[in-house]
Amino acid sequence: MMAKIRIGVSVVVVVAGVVLGLMIKAMAAQAPDIEVFASDVPVSIPVTNPAQLDYLDGLADNLKKINTSCKQKCINVKKRGVSASGKDVRVNLQKIIDEASKSQSTVYLPAGTYGIKGVLHLRNNVTLIGDGEKTVLRQLQSNKELVSMENVRNVTIYNVKLDQSKVKHTTRESNHTIRIMNSAAIQMSKLVIKGSVSKSQQEYGDAIYVAQKKLYSRKTEQIVAKNIVIDGASRNGIAVVGGQNMLFTDITLKNMSHKLNAAIDIEPDTGAEVRNIKFHNVEVKNENIHVWTETGTINNIVLDKVRALEGRLIIKGKVNNVLFTNGSAPYVTIEVEKDETLRPKNVKLLNSTFSNTKLKEVVFMSGENIMIENCIIKGGTEYGVRDVGIKGYFVMKNTQVYNSKGDGVFLYRAKHVELIGNEVSENKNYGVMLGNTSRSTVDTVVISGKNQFYNNGRDEIQIRLPKSKIIIGPEEQIEGF
Image (tube, rainbow, N blue to C red):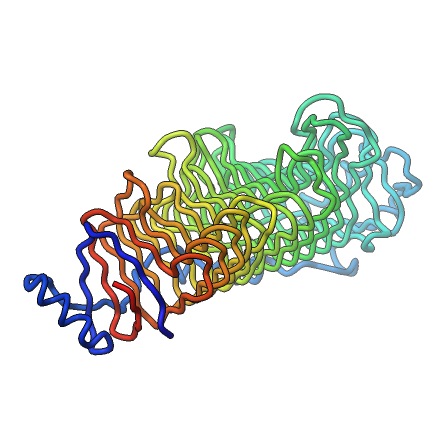
């Protein structure tokens, strides 16, 4: 496909290939010292460790098998006289859990509602099972978390509904439904979580909170959450503020309407690190997904088949190695937090769809080393893809960008830009704008892999980069120099 490209007079153009024929010869006659070569090799941006991914995928298999029935080494709380009428049974239930810890037994909660006035602590080597949504653990006291796992190991909670919605919290932001702190080998499966409720802008607790504090030496690791529905929270749906090696899979988050926070919040505490976390097959009905930090560090995050139906994906601050794949979101921002030292690095958007018609842009970037591959980017009132201060590499490969009311792709700060096999069309202004600002720092641009630029409102590609090198691959058929 022939596309029109306009290049400013101060650009050094490096062109290769027989396809351009006489055009190359004419340019060479005017500038005999021009180097002629092509590059069709995409830049490798390391965002995941395959071995670590395999480990996370098999994490649930590495933990003990869940005892889903009450046959051996099991305590039926009903037979111990624990009522399921909704009245407070915390003290008696806690005694049974403590007993089960010593014998590494399962605690079975038959169908019914178990009132908890205060905090229920799960101990080492305990499995707590119920009869699905018919088994309800309900918080009766305000300003308290419901279930706590603190400095413990080998704990499972299975097939239970946790209800934090019947009390009105008035203080603290730590009234979590489930709190996990300095604990390892934790499994949560087939849960329904009704989170704490706030009708104001106050923050009263996360549905699931995972942390690692300096209070204990035990690391928070090997956390598995599977087949969980989270229905509301007055703070975050899932908050990971410390720890490593976690898998969250087959999860739905809905009614997350608290505008100050997020459905998923990966945000380490001051000085803490979050490392090796995978979210798989997650649907967020509303609210944002946060991967950000100002005072901690984040490394190796995989968001696979994560669908944000209304909220934004925000990657911000001291974040390294993030892969968002096979998912969707209306908006993505990859940006610096306050200063240049807090810059996301090595971010890849793969096989995903990003679309909105209401926000200024669809993908907003100021990180370092960003790759968009096999994606669909649709809409934006001013831009489809917008660079506001990228460093290092920007690679866009086999991606469709269309229907922006302004520019399809606007880039000016990445040192090295590669556009490989993309389709940029039906944008009302420029298809691709490279430069157009005195602050441009682009050094090299590679255009290869049979890109298609067409039906854009102004030029298909406009390049305004002082003293930059433009490399056109041999497959390209571009006219209008």
